[in-house]
Length: 264
Image (cartoon, rainbow, N blue to C red):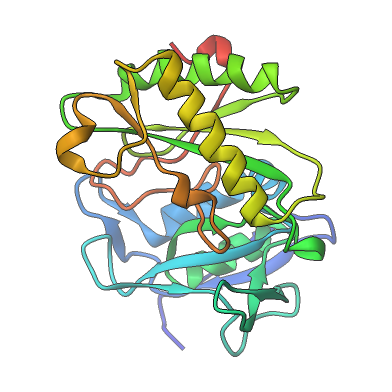
């Protein structure tokens, strides 16, 4: 056992839990000097909101062997020795195989994931109990070269209005990088292919309405200085960084939920 390990008391729905964090002084983000312990404290502070946004869903962990510049890999099923408050559910992948996928139900599980060197959390758009049927329609607005974050704002607003015409209430968050994620709750009665068709339809209609601002063209040389909407993100087992999830970028941003009135 590492002599510099610390034990954090993490509040949760079943009472406080002790979560051990080894190598707490390990620097994850060199530029601002943010450590593993800093990240654990952050997850404790946003724990309730984090679980509301990402809990109860199949989840992949993007783990790093050192800091953000080190080797990284995705972990889907709970590793051996996971505490009993970290569970898994079987999910079906595009290949047809079934695999146990990790689920986070309380803040202590998120802090435990930090102990396992997780930086980015990737939740599915479906619930653990009905993983084949998404309950969120998610659309990624990705700025192309020559555009930036500010260029995504009018596109996101136009997309919000388009989804409202279809009877959907849209929400927005920063991607944690350069773009925005727009998502809307849906009734979990359709499968992933249906959701992808819906995303394709919304993206093409948005491109038709604002062709100088939006593109669905996969060829980089034809995207131009526009916002790209990638429909592949709507495929089964494809995910986006969850709300409040950190990103492995030098300035240590997070994917932050916003009110529409705050977006500008």
